[in-house]
Amino acid sequence: MSDPSPKSSSTGPSSVELFGRSFFDGTAEQALETLLTSSAAQPTRAYFMAAYCVNAAASSEPYRQALTRADVLFADGAGMALAAVVAGHRLRANINGTDLCPQLIERLAEGGRSVYLLGAEPGVAQEVADRWRAEHPRLVVAGTRDGYFDEAESPAIAEAVRQSSADTLLVALGVPAQELWLDRWFPATGARLAMGVGGLFDFVAERVTRAPRALRGLGLEWAWRTAQEPRRLAGRYLVGNPLFLGRLAAWEAGWWAGITPREAPPAGPVAAGDAPGTERPTAGEGSSPGTPGPPGRGADSG
Image (spheres, rainbow, N blue to C red):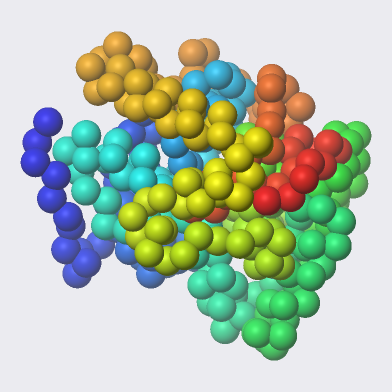
C-alpha cells in the first residue's frame, strides 16, 4: 500500500476505486459543481455510500446492479475514509448528504431551479419543503410525497414528478430501497438530477438529532446514533462495523471482489422490489441510510 497523501484543494476533483467501484474525491464545492455540471449535460443519479451500504451491497445483487448505473458515488463516513487510506489514497473531504444537500438547495435557489421531495413519514417532506422555502424564497419546491407507498403506485409517482417539471429529485427511502427505486423509475421522472438522501428529511425536520460536530469530526456519528437507538442500531454498527472491516481486509488482500455485480448488468432497470432483506437504515455516519424502506413499508423515521 502506498502512503496516503491528501490532494491539494487547488486541484480538480479526482476519483478513487473502492470495493470495485469508482468514487468521487474532492471538496464539497467541487462535489456541487460536479452534480450541477453533470446534470446539465445528462440525467444524473448520485448516491452516498457508507460502511453499512457496502455491507448491504455485499448481500444484494440488485443493489450492486443499481450501483453500476450510478453516475456519481460519494464515499460517506469514517469507514469509507479508512478504505481509501488502505487503498493508498486520502479523501479530501467527507461528502455526505446531510451536509451537502443543504448547500445544493442553496445553489438551486440561486438559479431559480426546482426540487421534488420524495420519502420519509407522512408530513415530513412537506415540513422540509416549508423550511427550505422560508430559508430560500427563490427555491421552487415542485412537489412532495411521503415514502409510504406500494410498488404499484410507483408509475403514478414517477409521472407526478414528471408533471411537476422538477429539475432535481431527492429520494429518502433508505438503503437500498431508494437506489433501487431510482434505478427503475428515474428515467420516467424527467428530472435532471436524482439523489438518494436517506435520513436527510428527518434531520432537516429535526425528527432526529445529529451528533455534535466534534463527534462527527472524529467519525463517531454512528456511536451517537447507536446511543440514541441502541435496540435498533446496536447490531447494525456493533456487528456491522467489524463485518465491514473484515470485508475491507478481504478486498485489499484480493480475496473479495467487492461490490461489483456477480452477473453482467441487464439492459433494463432493476425492479425496486427485487432486493431481498431491504431494511431502513439510519443516517449513520453521514446521511446516506435512513427513513422508510422499501416503498410502501414505511418504518420509523430516523
